[in-house]
Length: 103
Image 1 (cartoon, one colour):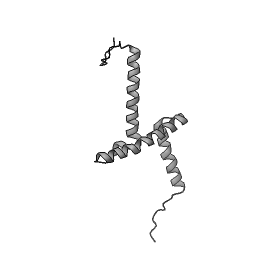
Image 2: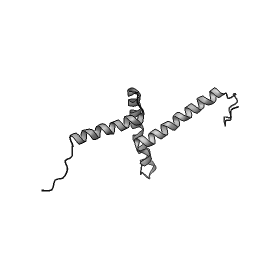
Image 3: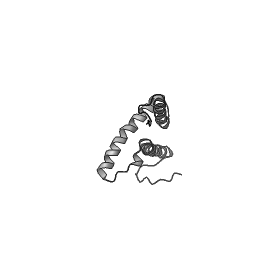
Image 4: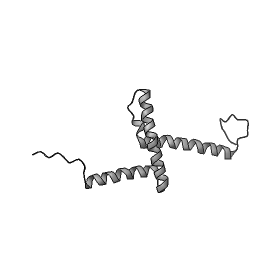
């Protein structure tokens, strides 16, 4: 027995329900990754136009991370962490901004 809110006339089977659920899960993953990895959830913009612009900048960043993760066969979260790790290691080896030294 399958419980669903699907109102189509065709008979819903377990396989169809699983396929629909898989698609919904992919949408949930996309939203979670977009918010957590691109900083879109931390947007302080109040105007609708500014929010749209911010999201328009976040989406290509997510695409880039997703493509890179697929190419490296890594989780998208690991790819992002590696990017920051590499950057921080390089800055610690050779800082571009020197610390202030009082004379």
